[in-house]
Each structure stands twice: as C-alpha cells, then as structure tokens.
View 1 (tube, rainbow, N blue to C red):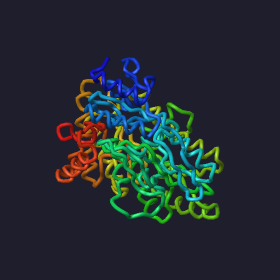
View 2: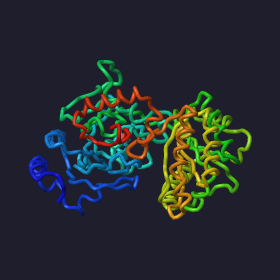
View 3: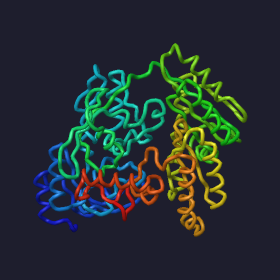
View 4: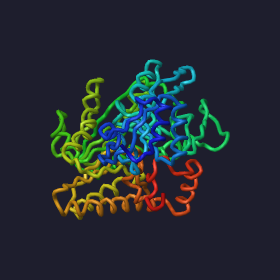
Length: 464
C-alpha cells in the first residue's frame, strides 16, 4: 500500500467507484512513465469518466494535499506525465466522447481522452479536419495535445493546437470549475485564458472539455521530395521556399545521418550520397496546384540539388511520406538512450544551427541526428550516445547544454512542441528572464495555491 492516507483512498473510491481506483503496485507501475522512458510510480491511479468526477477528485486532493497528475496516453517525450512526487495519477483516457459535431459552424466539442485520429475521422465525415497532427496521432489524446500545445507538420500553414482550440472547460488546482474562450472564431471579452492553459502542461488546470476549431479539407494535395548533396544546401533551400508567396502545408527536413537510418530500417529508396532531403506538401484548390508546384519547385532548385521528385498519385505520395514516418522508430531501435530535443530557431538561421550542431558533434564525440519541421524552424536534435561508453556518457549533458546555448544565441527557443516537463526545466531560466519567471510562478499560484497540480514541472525544482 502507498503513503496516501487510507481515508483519502476510501473517499476517492466513493467518488469514482472502487473499481476505478488502483493501489496495487503492479497496477500502478505502468502509470509512472511516459515516452521519455523515465519512471516514478504514483501512490495511486484513478480513472475519471465525467467532469463532476474530476472536480470532486481535485477537491479531495486539495483537502489532503495530495499531488495530482492528469494523464492521457503517456506519449509525451519530456516526462510531463511522470508523478515525480508520487501522489495520484488521474487518467482521463476513459473521458473519450465526441460530445458534439457542429459542421455548420465548423466546431467540435470533445472530452480530453478523445484520440486525435478519432477526431480527424469524425471531422472528415463532414468535410473538415483538425490541423494538429503529431506523429503519435493514432494514439495520443486531445487532452495531451492541449497540455503540450502539440503541433506536427501541418502547423506550418494551419497553426498549432493553440490556434485551433476556441474554448475549454477545466478544473483549477484550487478545485474551481472554469469556462474559457467561446464557441465562435472571434471574441475579445476578458483575458485569453484558453491560450494560457494550452501548453501549460497540466500545471494550471485539468481540461475536461474542449471546443475545437475545424478547417475544411483541401480539395487537392501535392507532395514533393527534394534531395541535396549537403545539409547546408537543404537548409538554404528552406529559407528560399519560405521567402516566396506560396505557403506549404508541410516542409520537413532530414539530414544525412537520418537518411542512412531510414535506409537501414525501411524499404524506402533514397539516393546514395544524399546529404539531406526535404519533404514538401502543398494543398489547396486543384486549379491552383500546378502554379503552386512550379513556384515551390523553382525555390527548391539551387546549388547541390541532386533530385526533385513530385508524386503523381496518392500511392506515390504515401510512399514518400513513409520514409519520414520510419525515422522515429529507427531512432528508437538504434539509440534507446538518445537525448531528443525539439528546438526552434528563425527559419533564416537554420543553416547556422546545422553548422553549429555539426561542430558540437565533432567537439564532444557524440553523433547528432537532425530532422523536423523546417518550415517553422522546429528541428528535432537527437544526441545519440552510448551509456556503455564512459566518455560519451560524460559528454552527453554538457553537449546538450551547448546545444541550448547555440539555439538561444540564434534567437530561438528550447521547445516547439514537446514542452518542458522535467527534461528541460533546469534550462528554462536561460530562456526566460527572472521577472517573467516570477510572474509565471504567481500565475501558477493563483490557479493552484497549494501546488498540487503536476508539481516540479516547467520550473526548475528549487524555483517551482
């Protein structure tokens, strides 16, 4: 049995039902980890199925000062769902209803446990889609997307979760029910608490309902793949593509080391000698596609372009994208101990970022693999180190620290979509000045005066 008081557990069972509260160590174990592969077991796990149950659970945790961590499917990569102080993990995976589909107003109301792909499928039946499309979309929940302001390739044209949520129903750390935003696409009444809660990693409030803004499905799509002899040539092409009037809906970057991994772990056919490649997707009216492809192709051409391929069918497009989707599993297999960061720099500074990362890889003797959403400067930087190699083990964290210094020097930021969690909290004071951090802590205290919501996240431990 855990350190949680027995009376708390009994009252929690009365609220949720005894079958929805887990205290056995074996049952609790899976809920102490996420995709960061860190692990701290909770003292108890509870499953809510309604807003009222979430409200009562938070109020109980307040009464007994029990830390509470809201959880979806645990696909986050920075340890944001790990209960570092033990306490209660409140799983929202069973709150998975699509409450309302309002095609006339292009909105959908959902519970936080609804799966991203389920939302896409439902919206598609009405000729719409919800733009956030993280790699984990087949499994991740909208609540998790909201907690981390998730994005994906389409964020380049359609924005992140923050731009595609109109309103929220949530429970603050104080146990208060709040309603933020509107069900309309315009509204400037009061402070924008919706955008504040989105991306706050469950430290301010637990979302129990979200009103999503849907977008009409485009009439047509085109996919291109551009292969370059060098990383710098590809990075320069990104700057050219983003400087012209046609905005791609996706612009993905993959460096040479990543290409080699894809070649070894998938059936994708890629030219040997490739230093980097770009995946480019356009969407819009069919009548405009020819001119758009021509414009993008012109910008993609330049020094060191080895090959430019345009998919002629949906099957060819799927084959090109299969290459990109094979990358994350390949990295997992070859480097289980990798440090995976999702830094962002201004698009025009990508060439400098790549040059700097190559220098750091040589200096510290650690392979660095880079890929990501180049159209908005969001590059996934993967430090592949061997824990059995004492020198690499020693160098990994100092190398990561220098990566963050480089990113900030280039006018960038530490995370574009993965969040801070526990992985980056020790570095946040490099990116945010002390006065602003103090204001953020004051906001946290206003929402969560007893500090029970997802404690020891976002802020450095001694400043939380």
